[in-house]
Length: 426
Ligand code: MTE
Ligand code: CO
Image (cartoon, rainbow, N blue to C red):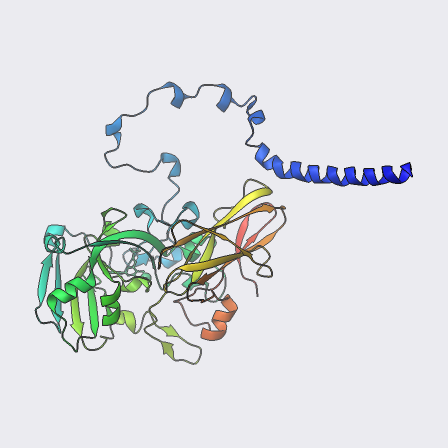
């Protein structure tokens, strides 16, 4: 009898020991942060220079810059994509950022004729075409209209375009970094059009930039009157020159190409203009040789920013955080799912921070990594119920000729040593 009891007891304590060991192993990572570790660590036991000597005074940085230890947090380009820097692209370092707002200095840049440098005193915005009164505004004139503050993502239609035919670029900065999310201050475009008085046959607006590329895009009047802004501030300060200083058009949820920078003219017309940027470019060639055009909305999309190829896991197994971004040109993000096994099983991620329509959303998945290989993916669903497609689903629908509007699910292959690679699963 007693043997039997002992047996039972032994089993219980054995499994309890296993549990404790598992607990300890899990805790071992956190133990790295415990006070015991400090023994013998000179960073704890010895007074450091920054603790001993006075620092710089308040006048050292009239315009503050990030810490020198953050010098790696910069926009980067892909050399083979950027033969000529004036008609080129660089990418937001998504893997170095958190939250939903992109700092002004690292918002990706895309320009077709270089950055125009314009003194705001010399800048004019004209409204002409099918209006009762053609108008020309100075920057001061614009400041007299009611203005609003809104947070929006801007995604270039070509974001992830280089990945249409397969995984290619090793880093979310390069695969997904043609996106930024900024708090804009501007005048609703509706007020300016109302001031000019749109004629009843005025159904389209042509937006034109003052840069050497004189970028032009046709925008349907419904959108112009709905939520477009003529913006002059980003994240509280003046637009950066590379983002269109002193004035840019904000076209929420729609492809970045329509967000005309250095905005100088709005022409009202009765049909679209068929400009270069809406015919030979920014259309999607399908497998049957026909092209989709007027594909304005940026559909639901997400990407895991950490870990990712430029941001491997360096802390070993145990407790960890997967983090990423999700967005939809149709509104808010309703849910993000995360998979660590290539899409076989999904867990609901934790959305954190403001959930604003047509803005980036931040998600986290907090879990215990057992140290084995993972194929990590995220899949976003927007409030309209649109589910982010797999890359196979996207190619089945659109063929392989496209560049623009690639919102397929991204897979990162995480190896046991924490190194991460861009791969595809099917
Ligand atoms: N506006 C002008 N005037 N000239 C341009 O070259 N590039 C467009 C758009 N507006 C462009 C422009 C493209 S393709 C994109 S994706 C966005 O601006 C990029 O905005 P960003 O440089 O602020 O990221
Ligand atoms: Co673009």
